[in-house]
Every structure is written in C-alpha cells, then in structure tokens.
Length: 219
Ligand code: ADP
Ligand code: ADP
Image (cartoon, rainbow, N blue to C red):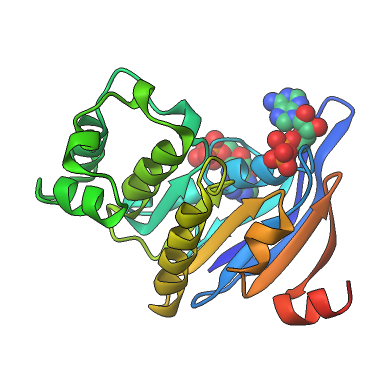
C-alpha cells in the first residue's frame, strides 16, 4: 500500500506538486498519468526518500520510505533507467545490487532470465544497452529483493511493443500475487492496458482518479 497525503513540493515559486493525495492498493496496478512536467517524478522521488517534501506526507507499507526496516527489499524502485552506471556490465549491476541486499548470488542469473536479457547481453556494458534493455535491467534490480511494492517511473520508455506487453504481463502477475504497483507514464495507451486504477495529474494537481474502466467511460 502506498499513501500520498496532501503532498506539496515547491521549487521557488513553482508548486511542482500541489496538495496531492492518493492511495495505491495491494493487488492492484495503479497508473500515474500526466504530461511531461506534471509532477510525477517529483512525487515518486519524495515517495522513495530522494527528496524531502515542502508539506504533506508519503508512505509505503505504512512508513516513510527512509524509515522502512529494509527499504531495498520491501520496495522495488526504478526511477531513471538511463541513469544506470554505464561502465558496469548488466551482470555486475545485478551482482552489486544482490550484495547490497545480502541476497544469494544465484539471483543474478535468475533475474537476467526473468527480464528477458540473454547471457551474452548480461556480459555487455550498460553504456551499450538500449533504453529498453536498461529498463529490463532496472526492473530486474527492482524485483531482486522479492519486494511487496513496485514504484516505476516511465518504465515503458524505450521498450518496443513486445517489451511493453512483457512488462504488462509481469506487472499483472506481480499485482495478482498481492503486490502493489505504482507506475507513471505520459501515455494513456501504456497506462490503460495495465492499470486497474488511474491517478491523473496535471500541473502538480490531481485532475481525476478512480478505477480505469469507470474513469475512461467518462472520457
Ligand atoms: P514529470 O515527472 O511529470 O514529467 P516532474 O516531477 O519531473 O514532472 O517536474 C514537475 C515540475 O517541477 C516541472 O515543471 C519541472 O521542471 C519542475 N522541477 C522538477 N525538479 C525540479 C528541481 N529540482 N528544481 C526545480 N524545478 C524542478
Ligand atoms: P530525519 O530522518 O531526520 O527525519 P529526513 O531527511 O529523512 O531526516 O527527513 C527530514 C524531514 O523531512 C522529516 O522530519 C519530515 O518532516 C520530512 N520528510 C522526509 N521524507 C518525508 C516523507 N516521505 N513524507 C513526509 N515527510 C517527509
């Protein structure tokens, strides 16, 4: 479960996030939809402890992210796939995450396989990866600790249609197993095919939210 309560984030005169509240529930995929600059990343950065809000509160599994006993294990996070260290191979990236989380080494091969990266691709440096491959690697890192919650910022960017279908099935399975998924996108087409619930944001404010079928029936 994710709760955003009256969250405001100001940068000087700009309210990048302006009194935003919503909940993402277990067993459901929640899509966070809005145009570029709407405040999605800012919200997700506060939620995952990377920024401190001007006002309000963001919690995951009942705690502020930074107060979770095992943030890396409880919550899988992928905020910016393009920011992964280019000098490491995919395998090294996963091995580092695995050591940081104190998990057995076998996870690296399992995770590569799970996200559809081949053995040969795992040995290449991340700087030579396409954005879609980086997204897959980022999702592998996010899933590695077997989390109960996934927070993904624009994870479909750079994925081809087959990759987007793969991700939809993966997120569906994760939610069907009881997990909570919050993913952002600027494209309704990417959100509507996977999300049970949609939260729409524009210029820092929530403009609509609800179950996907009901929300889109009114569009
Ligand atoms: P989205 O993820 O929906 O594209 P962002 O959360 O990245 O939107 O940005 C929301 C607004 O806040 C934008 O106008 C952006 O330029 C601004 N913004 C984001 N981060 C900062 C920052 N560190 N300093 C100043 N303005 C920022
Ligand atoms: P501390 O652990 O000393 O509180 P933090 O940098 O984690 O340091 O947070 C500083 C302050 O920022 C907190 O006391 C709180 O007021 C605010 N803060 C940080 N993260 C959040 C969040 N997710 N929701 C609400 N407030 C937060």
